[in-house]
Image (cartoon, rainbow, N blue to C red; front, top):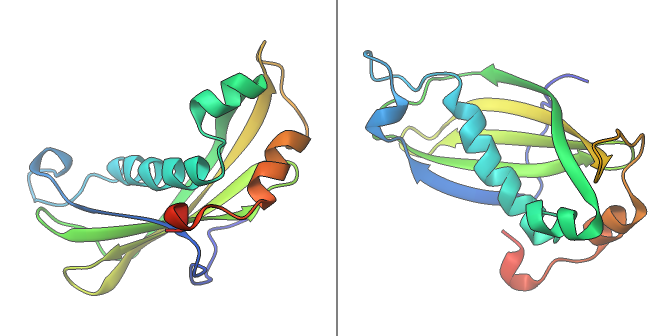
Length: 149
């Protein structure tokens, strides 16, 4: 599966920020690795919305690990740019496939598209070959209105 070309759905989890100085290189361009930090912040919001963030998973007896990630950079974010990251599920049956869009609000253009795959393990770290039923149930429940974005 490659980086999705589709637009984010209306219910995608959304976070906004401003590029800090410590995220840029000497040319004032965001170092490529920091995009994954921005994805993590949006993914955390998405997971919390469905009550499957870190402590929620530990309480259910599971862990979640990133098994794959890829990013297509379209236009670089630079120091001081305002950005918006949207995260949404592409697939939830065997792994969690999460898609992302990074939008440069300051320049009104897409900065990047990406996706990550996350797999579940049990409490001992044994890989599970499907998303646990309790997790799928939480994903398919309607999130509270306060958690919708």
